[in-house]
Image (cartoon, rainbow, N blue to C red):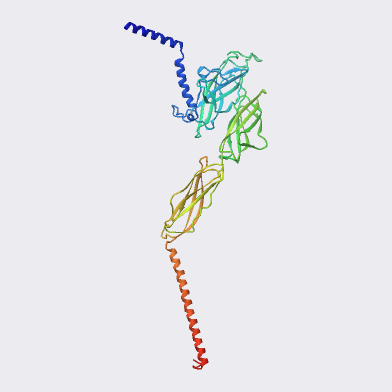
Length: 492
């Protein structure tokens, strides 16, 4: 029996080895499938906003999709992707997946080149907006959300073979308005150029030709004439341009601005001419704009293009952009609060408040408070959030508790303060003043008694006068009768 068991065990071992040899990728497929399952969960709209924190404690913005192949790619990143080279161009593709929800489902991607004399790239400003799109994954067959960053890099005709780093910077904002920025390095491999050490030949005088870079103009900084830009208001943008070359000047430069959506260019033209910009020099240009009054609160882009020539007459183009944040102006109307002209000590009255939002932005945490000597409110009148084009009301109870000092009664002056915040979180206030008299609780009875006494006095006087008139009439009637009958003395 033992020999039979041994033979069976040997047979089983041989069969398992054959299976493993026939399917060498079983374990890899399982691992890859498990990894793709995790990534596909991260691609769903619900999971985009639920990604965790990086090991360093900060939010890790994006990661490369190294499993799938997209348009312009021959291999995935896990299989050693390199940008395609052809027709003096290099096509760089970087598929990114966001590890948390990105505001507007849009990011900004820009390129930077490394330092060196023999870089193969034609220098330009590379920057573009990339939106989230959905692509079909190869293995699962389901669609995944990706930010597909793609650039077409122009290569120099006289380029050298080698592997050159290109830094891709991506930036955006999360739903809370926090900035997200991350850099990725992709290597472009040149194989159709010259070998290192080759030269163009000797110049006049026997010196070798040294590769020189064309001067590059970039936006050094920009600032606006207003600290807070409101939709519908005019503002001036001052742009500072800088020639990054320390040896070559820039000539015949034409600078043009292209306002984006909801931004209006003011003035006759959106272009400005600079005759010459010295090596390492800077210049300032100004343009006037206005964000449309109906535009929602947000950040808007203004494109800037610089067309110029170098010292040898070669033409170049550089591009950049300005970002302007605009807010909606607050337009609020608060009707006067009706306060009683008199209020008795100990009496409680109810005040009604109302707020009308006439602007295009929402108002937050609208409330009203009352302050006055001798009057105590039950609390603030909380109105709440008021949508654009609507009105809301609130109320508070106020009790008269008497003036401070020796006299509890008299005239008191107070104020009602309304508090509210705009969409940017800026808190504002409006005040209303009022005046009222605090009276004694017995003041009503004391005033009624004199009126009642006065009426009684007039009644008594009327009765007395009536009695006197009646007595006089009776007297004259009797006297006339006596005279007629002769029964009495006329002189009586």
